[in-house]
Length: 449
Image (cartoon, rainbow, N blue to C red; front, top):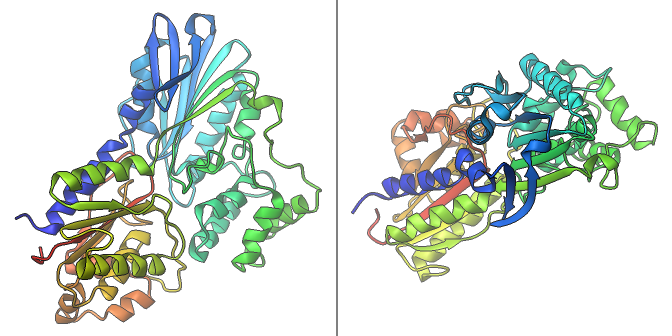
């Protein structure tokens, strides 16, 4: 029999392949007899006569956006007048008519600001006889940094860093970032009005809320300044963010600054939004692969969020129950989940939520034979690292101790990346050019695997 580690590698590979951005666009956007057909959940939701549009613009941002743009170029070719997308460094694809700007993620940089400026400029050029195709995917918030003056890019970077270290969820982070931006929270829709807009989104957020994906540049903002202020206060960073950020958020909460556009605003009348890929598609692909490999498989949820350590404890408990009693699945069993957990950073080490999950799983599974775990970011980068995640099993802690590694020190310093690097247990995929949050797999085999 193959090892459990080999099986998990096949499963997460299948999950990532299932949310290929190019294929997702071609499944939801088709050109037939001069018409552009838009599909959602296999149903046609819009048909547009391409001959009535004077110009076609392609705009977007995110880790998956380069392959999305490649698909749109295949469909529309020289019908595209101009385009600009902002992608993470290394997350590129060959393009001929759409400009791709590589920028920093998760903390924004000047290249991202320049790309955002260009994207707003192109959107503002579009008129009532024009079509805008928007390609939005996870990571777009950091890749579209266009702060409202007097907030500077450096001040927004500092705020993003504080939010990342606080353990705030992506929903909470984006509530803040939207209220510091000239492009997020529906403001790009204002710029593009009155053009016709097709907004294709690949979701990297729990619940697939369109206004949270890349902070919803073309979606009504459901959050408020009061929500943003509550996030800063909840994580006790209201006094730590730069003064200009604090003043804008407080002024907005006091009604002194207008809110971002809401659902009843005219700028959304011409916008059609479709989510073309999400976490559950990846999980179902992993489930199918697991079944093909002979595992009794359970998909727990694509909505797992909250503290990473607690999530690891919960998953380890389920796997141990499956080994002991056959519930919720009899061995050989495969337990799968998705979503996105958070890590409150106390140390100065290196890592992300997936290597943190694997480290805590190793602790909770220590000495248990027959259970292996993998936690993988579908984008191929776990936090600020070159790893997608890591493997762990019941022997991980014993191996670490034999190698002279103190697991407690690594855990206290949030240094999960170096812990697994020293053990040779990192999962390295390289940039995947997609992003639908995380895939966690726990395998249970009585033979020990």
